[in-house]
Image 1: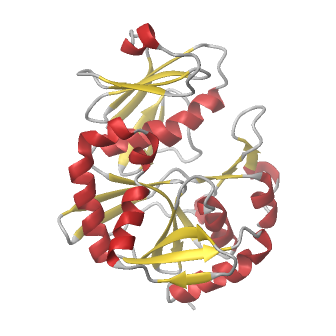
Image 2: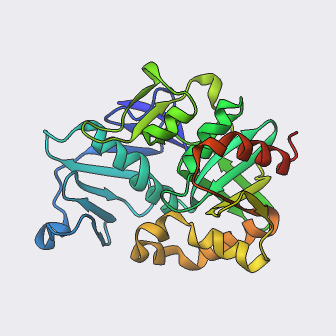
Length: 302
């Protein structure tokens, strides 16, 4: 077994999911199981993803990977895959949607976001897939700032004044052109899995923060525009941006309904205690240094 700490939980996993190991008692266990799944009787091979909610837990199925069962407390994850499946492919599912749903079930707010510590300012980049969250994160790291999380941001909110943002898994997922734009190369880069173009960039101890934070100083909602612009949205726009970028809601509406009211309340509380900005820019990697400098100024770091 491999032991890790991510998203505020000690995770025990039968396969490696990170380079940073711990030696502590786990409260989330990921293990292999051949237990029967209710999805087996109605799997549609034409669908790339299916889910089922039962009294025993939530079942997720990807035809090319297998089936994952997450108990309703988010404490145990059972993995049922064929032996010939690439372990890196399995790991991609676990470190993305599977753990995101587990953290959601554990009572956290899970955003589709990447987090960075810019000097002493805690910032998130939120947006749908392809919005450039990881590219912005990698660019900020290239300027000496530190990774908090990539793609999945897990936040615990208790009331309107208590907030905890947890560090995530110390790696960044990048397309080759984005990796090239920030001069990533060498041993820290590998393909996410064999035959897939997207890359996984491992981060060193010096690149990441290990502690949690009791605040988020600024949230940048990413968008596309012909010019680079940062503006302050209306309170309603800011709240809607958070709700629309809740990870589980973007992935599976039925699973999101299990905690929809609680999630809405947490988004409202987060919007009240955090500065929200809209960052619009062209999809031009050559502009990244200027965009990062603008983010640094907006966050009050330079």
